[in-house]
Length: 172
Image (tube, rainbow, N blue to C red; front, side, top):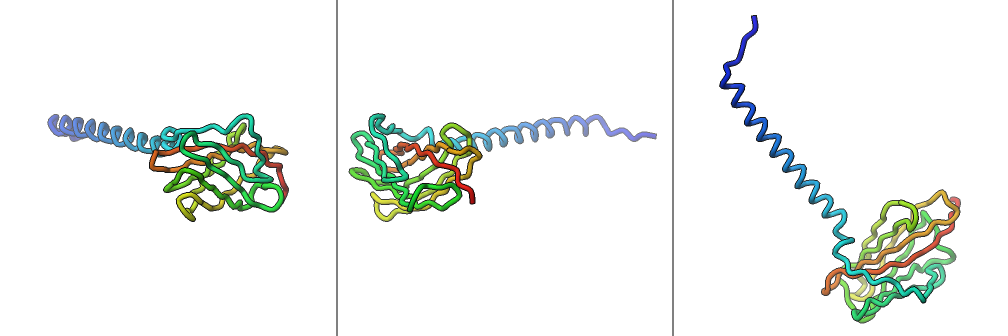
């Protein structure tokens, strides 16, 4: 013999279930919005200054500079002995001229292959000199092209530029 629940108790559970489903969906949407906002906020809030197309610079040999419009100038250096290699901690140095920053973030990403984005915050030696370490991952190609993005957090907002770098594969 089956026991049946009274009709009233079943109908009171449905609105509660619907309410819990709606609350769960709203929570998931809000969490997804925060996640996406956090993930992509660096790229959208930045005023980018492209490097000059008529100036070539080789980070393997010397620091490279870029004009940040009327704000000033930024210089990136990776001071290593010999060529820059993957899987080796790299000293990274950013110097500013005519502009000051509170924070500097350097990111390495594959220029023509999705290798992920590796972000490294630099420590402030002064408001115009930042140092830290970064590292390139290894690639199966003989040569990998990387884009190094530098984002400055300044009083005028976030500003940035990029530098391109080609790295030969080295075997451990």
